[in-house]
Amino acid sequence: MTELTLGELKALRERESSSAALSNDAQNDDAPQRGKVKEPSHNKNHAVSSQTVIKKRGSKAPVMLPNNVTCNPYTIIKLGKKGPDARLVPRDPRFSDFSGTLNDDMFRKSYAFLDEMRQDEAQEIKAALRLHERAGPNSMRAATALENLRHMGISSIDDAKRALDKYKIQNQQLQSDESLRQFKKQLIEEEKEKIAHTGKTPFYYSQKKVKKIYRDREQVKVKAVLESAAINSAAAAKIHKKAARQNKRQLKRQPQLGVK
Image (cartoon, rainbow, N blue to C red; front, side, top):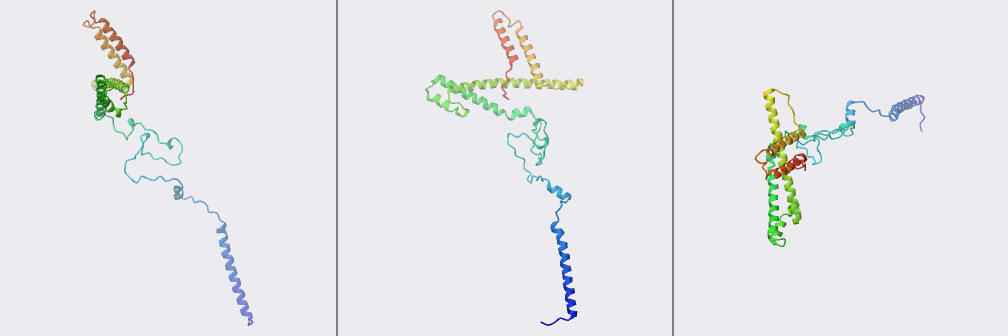
């Protein structure tokens, strides 16, 4: 090994000291970065991304809902939201912008086929019962007619009689509802004429008020008929008194079966 001169030793020491200084500076720069905790940024974009983003519907097709949900299908519910607005609010189709105006006459014309179906079914039951009475319970024709009524849930003569009674009660209730509806329509027309000619304040009839007025007018009609001299002759007096009592009971009772 050759011996170094004094100048070469001095140059070597300066090179080593400069390289050591550079390495110390690099370590000092890396130390705070390693121990530094990353603070959350207060940027607006970060705040928006932290919330749950509601995706818009890509399709323009109508919203499909099950039959047991009566809510606005276009209400956007935010996930994680609390309070009264966190759930779907049931809507009343009478006051909703998503439902049109109800035209009762047009509705009944559109669904008049249901009344025709009900009448046809009642005629089929009557025909089967009549055939059973004429031909007897052991007749093949009576058994075939009864077999044709199975789609109505009728499997025996007793079931057919109960179904026929049910149809009769339903028809009576439907006729009563129809007469009451026509009477309410007449009252509304009379109120419109009064408003147009006299300028009176509109009065909106409730269903309870309409029933009361209808009952009172029917009682007046029955009373006027029964008090007429033509039907109060000696032989028919008892019959008409009995009819008056029956009509009075009917007007008071007015059974409601929920059939519309």
